[in-house]
Length: 481
Image 1: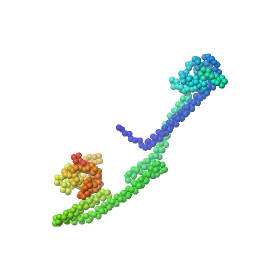
Image 2: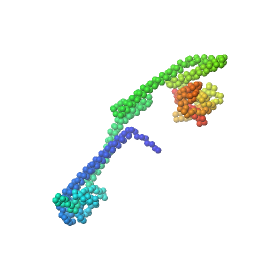
Image 3: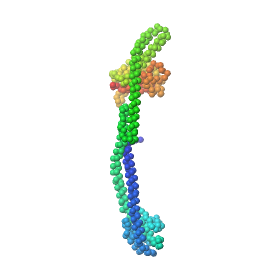
Image 4: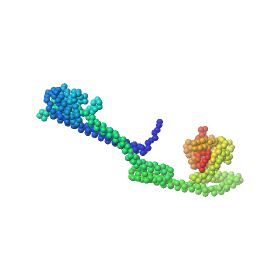
């Protein structure tokens, strides 16, 4: 299904403003039209009814009446139509007469009007429309006799039929003027709509820009507060929030800097005594065979723990350099297959536990020392926590951003638990909480990830399709400083 892009806030505000203006204009025009139409028609019908009543009362009706007398009366009445010329029809019993020498009766005189005139001595009127669509005003007035203050019906009824074309033309002209004035009116309404939209959208636009700057780390961003409306209140709230956020972030940054400096200082201060301790333990290890069993065991334990502490201090120093953004790349052109082989040989991992798939002639520009650390950590982690055999495969891939180097390290172990996967690269994280005294510091994979990121690459951990953990390294063939 096709989705249409939503209209902008400016367009919706202008559309809403014009819609309100159009509704107001149409409502006002409709009410004005209704009132004006009723006033025009009422004036015409009141004049016609009053005129016909006066003329009928002024006539002398002699009963019984013949055709000639009835024709004479309607002829006289037909000459005095007000406010427009009219045709007068007379009815008396079976006699019919018309001031117009046409038909003896009119089709616009309805039976309903005849009943109303018969029951009302003061007459009645009705607006009707003929077959051609012409609107007529039909006024029925009975002729009565005054005897002792009592009005007696004579049976003679006069009907005046008047065309309302003039009034209808006036009403049509009003409608046409309203239609012609609606479009310019709406066009003019666009100007205040634009001004209103601008006054509303300016603070919203300023707030959007401020939020964008705040999101980019410019915590000193503030909005100028104008007025005292809801948008001004929102701007003040934004400024207060930004001020509080700036203060909180500043405090967190200071605490982070202090923590990093503390870790770096501690690690640096520990390196010198640890170097001496390592030298001493190496000498003692050489003469451990000449000591008794318990003393030799204690000595070897001290030597092992001293080694762990030395590794931990080096890892902390490395992490501190990454946190301080002081880590640098020393790039060199490297034969990837040769670099992988040398890493395995240095750690004596050439005893058949490692299976490699190393295509020749793959060269990359990277930091050899950091690449050695990355590969050693991945393979060592696979051997220690996964199990042999461990496979290392190297290949390249073409991407829109350029050529990439892909290295996969898979082990034959049980794999990584689902709850562990999200934390596999966290610092000091160990999948097995019982291994608190293992040789690992919990910083190896974290340092590996930082080295990969420094090269502009990514490192992904998952479970292989055949079981076991699978680490995929994806980095550019040519890293950039």
